[in-house]
Image (cartoon, rainbow, N blue to C red; front, side):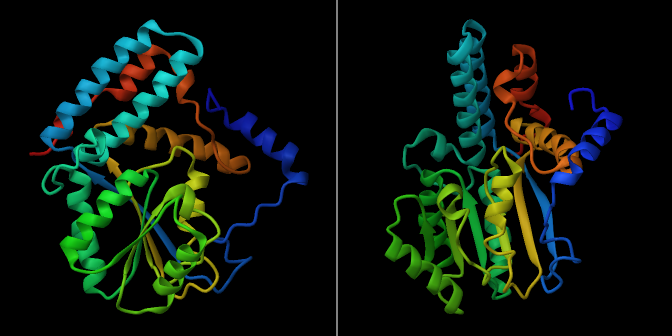
Length: 284
């Protein structure tokens, strides 16, 4: 993998082939009655406020990472990833200050535009975030913005309430057309085929986890084509990690499945390149 050696990748695939059977829902020879799934990245700009916060986090955390070793260093890298992803989501998410949401996040502005189209078409959508705090912010804001009830399922949702949410979303045509789910709580075990749009507002580093979440809508019983929208802030670690994941998926999918997180093993110079903000990508 490190040297992108296609010959060795092919050798490995041949060695494990007798022991592996991959069953993909996208393989029409296995499941013929599923519609199509279209996956696309939605590229967003940071606002000036987001860019300032982003650069401040990088400066502060890189100074700490340069001085740390071992487990402490790994912990700092993971903390930096979290902080930067929160900034990319929305300043209010990173600051946890309950401040207003409009006109401060490129991602949120783009989500509003796309959800407006979903609602105008009388369609339904799932919105995944890995952060319960962001889910709560989105629920409150989007309910006011669109004047409709928006469901939100997270890790603390009781089973009875969870089942009722799923039933309402699946069976009621007009009410609650948008369903926000925390990635870990709503990513498995649910049947949400009433949705034909899936939005990944922030990204999980393991594509298999994202695919499991997408499969709440793209599963047997789905009658419409499913559009999967993955949000990426350009010029940030989100864009670079997305590119790295795609490169690793080329190897992983050529063998068997999905890649794993390798980010905490990066050198300090590699981390600087990963985290650095490209100022040309910042919006107004």
